[in-house]
Image 1 (cartoon, rainbow, N blue to C red):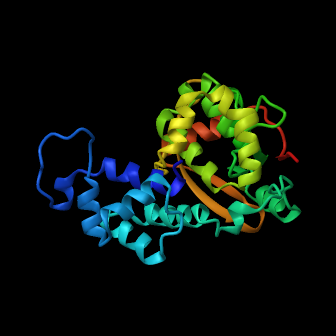
Image 2: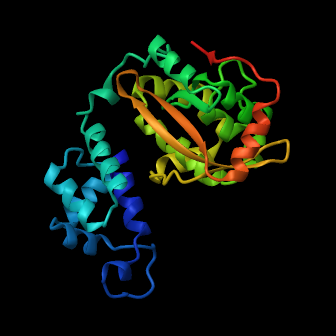
Length: 278
C-alpha cells in the first residue's frame, strides 16, 4: 500500500521532463517523466531504495534523503515544504496530523474583533477543511449570491466539488479545486478522515479523490470570480495563519480599479452584519 510521501515522489518524477534537468532523451517509454534510475542517481540513493519509498515499503527516510530527493526533483520552496511534511506524517512524527482531538470550530473573540476591524472589506475565517467559521459583510456580498453561504454550516471544499454553480463562479475552477483538495492534507487527521469518508468523498466523486492524491502544490494566484450579477472580480489574497487554532483569516483585496468599483457596488446592496458560526 502506498503512502502520501511515496505518491508525491512518484507523481513529481512522472511530471519531470528529463531534458529540463539536462538529461538525455532516452526515446519512447511506457510511462512519462524521469526514470527511477535517473532520479536515484541524482539523489545519490539506490534504485531499490527509491522503489521502496515510492511503494510505501520504507516509511522513514532520513532528513538527508528527503533533502536529496527535493534537490534531485528540483522542487520549489512550497513543494519542498510539502515533501518534508509528508515525510513527517508518513513516519508518524507529525503531532498535528496524529492527534485524535478534532480542531476546534470555535472562533476566539479576539479573532472576531480582528474581523470586525476589517469591515466592510472582504474577509473570512476558515479551517483547513474549508469550513467558513466567520465572515465579514463584504464576503457575504461577494459570495452569497453564488450559493456558497446557502448551508447553515457553509464549507468551501464541499461547495467547490458538489455545487454546479461553483464551476461558473470560479473562473479558474480547476486551480481552486486543486487548492481545496491540497489543503485537506494540512487538516487534523482524525477529523479529516471522518469528514472525507462520511460527507465528502462519496458525493464529490473520483475527480476529488484524484486531485487529493496527486499532491499538486497550489500556486494561489489571483482569484477570478464571475459574480452572478454579471460583474467580473479579480482579487488578491492575503492569508494570516492562526496556527494555535488550526484556522486562518483570508483577506481579499481588489487587484484593479474595475474590481474595486465592482466590490463597492456590491457593498451598497443589502447585506448582513458580521457573521460567526460555531
